[in-house]
Image (cartoon, rainbow over all chains, first blue to last red; front, side):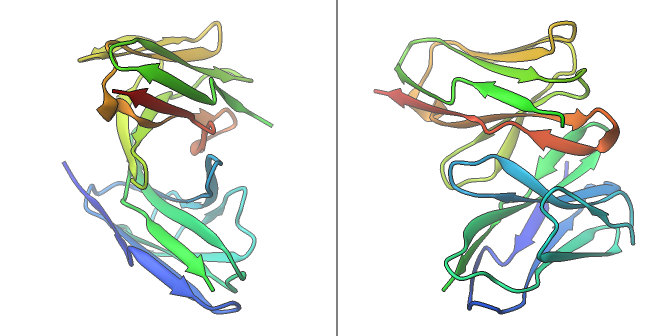
Length: 110
Length: 110
């Protein structure tokens, strides 16, 4: 078994601020994902990474940057937080066909 | 583009009743996975089921490739089954991209 950790658990930012979310996995999985979940909506793919140093844009990549410097970690940066934005950011990893998820980071922008 | 449709969007049951949740796909089916999300929580994998039938306790997943659909059956529902059920599959042209339905919100009354 393995585990995915996400930090921080809660993130409060100011409008226009640059914010970074971190994700670590010890499954030794090659592929990692960042999703955004808004209330009442499904998961939308922001970025994914097939292997270390690889980055692929998802359907919602505008306004975000990502970094995969190590196989075990995948970071997401909100380049300019939007006022009144509230969402949960979920990190996942995948080895083979099955995906596993971290506990999420809840973002609130004041 | 490829779409994942889940139905019903929401469902209210009396404890002890059964539930049938559906997931339909607009293109050929690859790598089907069902998840459970408790309110405010992360996603827990219930089944990885690309074809056929799998059972775990009171839960049964059936995927019919020809009909481009997968179902999740919950028997003898309990209040602890309340939450959101999500299905996901690989995008047809890119096996690394996993896309989600919007989920079925289940509420089981005591």
